[in-house]
Image (tube, rainbow, N blue to C red; front, side, top):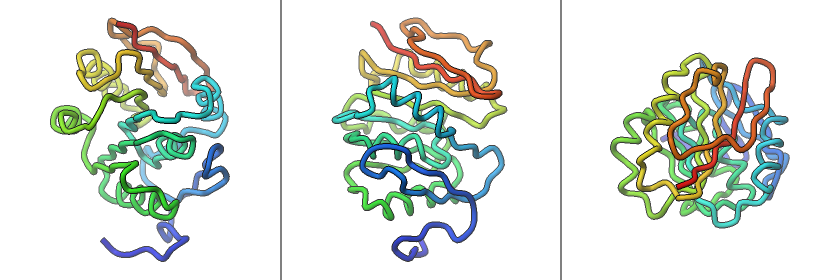
Length: 201
């Protein structure tokens, strides 16, 4: 992997700002890519108000990571570990570079360059502990990916009994909510709707 000068990310592309926690106001750089659409500041602010701002000790999965801003916000707010799953090798490399620029401890994050379906079938058995929070924000116009990922969580032995799942997308009205999950909060921003699900078993 080519080295990146300290304090700099990908030479060209887009930027997004972390809005809270230890790395508040730090900027992440990521490549321009079709359907790569970071969660807006206002939605992130709402989400972390729902979650209570700080996430000390939480283990988090960012399953369609993209820019990684949701997972980076979680780390900034004290999460013990965040896993980033991103199908684009180029974007996954930018995630690693941004984690290095933030001086994030290597033990607190993992980045996988693979698609979510492959990750769900191959990787979870290697996890060191249960996942407390999952971010599901797939490419905007591919709702089938969202339903498939959500369905896979129903029987996931690695998901904490009281886990939360944040879902963001454009067609959530047609989303089938699996048994054991309830909607605890929801909001809208433009075309996008966001819901926070709670697992109750």
